[in-house]
Image (cartoon, rainbow, N blue to C red; front, side, top):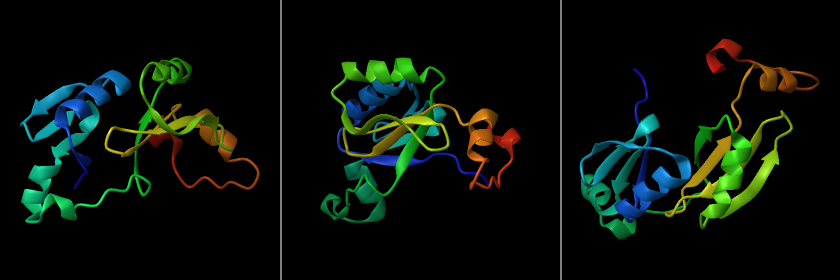
Length: 144
């Protein structure tokens, strides 16, 4: 078994597709109207159709963007973080550096889903994290 597509419920498909295209550079690979799949496997589903699939009223769907996130890695992180200024972004925090050396920025999409974009996790970052009190329990080859 393998996971294929994380899915986000959205209130306005066109607005969300435009956001993911312009801000994160994703492209539509499948468009079924109420469900759109973007490069990287991210799927967007309209609120109404998702509620219909579940057999509930759309008002019964909760919203909380602080319990999960969609994670991306960007090789040219500084350029990406700089380009974010051109968009009306609601930041969780500006670009920062974690204790393990990875630089990240977190912000919300138009529906309040939390997005993290960071520098790629690689052997150098992991090697820095594996000094001192940190213990690495994963294989670098799987990450780089």
